Image (cartoon, rainbow, N blue to C red):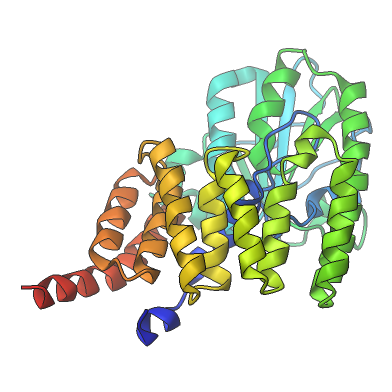
Length: 381
């Protein structure tokens, strides 16, 4: 691999996606009702959900109020109307995980109509939120209430004075009571159950407590890893996974892979990676571990060869129709010196991308991929 390939920068937009890819794809967390499953937020591979570790009302508690903010689209509801389910998401429109939640919220608003009130509150100035809500890229995806709260009054009403929770953070409310809280990416599995009155609140509370304990264990593992105590972190992971719930066990292999990569134990990591390829937790997980390699050890030839196979596996399984997986495959192809293939794959992903962030990231990468691909084609003549 050339020095230029090894030094190729990861663009800011792709770095913003790293949090999303790292957990929901690489760790292979499957969506599970009532607990914290996929995490499309700002934590990295295998880290606990900051949204659930923050203060604020738990499942079964009353939602504090009143919720006061400046609406730039629609009108703020009371969150207490009988027979209506509410989704309340605290976000920041400049943050990629927050923006990725918006199409999920819009889809739910369109699906359930008057049975569901969806509200997104950003902690940015009113002028910025209004401009965002009226932009051509995002306005069609915002079929719900959007509000600005630059002083974070509503956020501190809910989470408590002096609180600075990690965003985005979502709540599902019915009858003024919190039915669920967690990552907005998981709303699609929770909201239909609540709207259709099939939600088991007691089971959700038990699952939340189990998840809280799991997240505390994962936080300890993160601390060990950050301190360079990789062997201790791996032993702690093994202990946690031995007693984990089925949904939690799904992340164990991906988390072990990440720890081994971080410890520079590449052969051991690739052995775990092969196990993941044989039985992935979901179709995107192989691409997720390829993304980890591309970010952490892009100059390792053996790891790159594995990453290419892993990304190709996800791309084939999804019939080439997932733009995020296509973006990952293109990056790995580029790092592997397959310049023409990288450009072709990135163009395909761009044609499929429905997120403005992903489209911009792919356009940015194509500015590098396409000239290099043309140069490679010219040299081969």
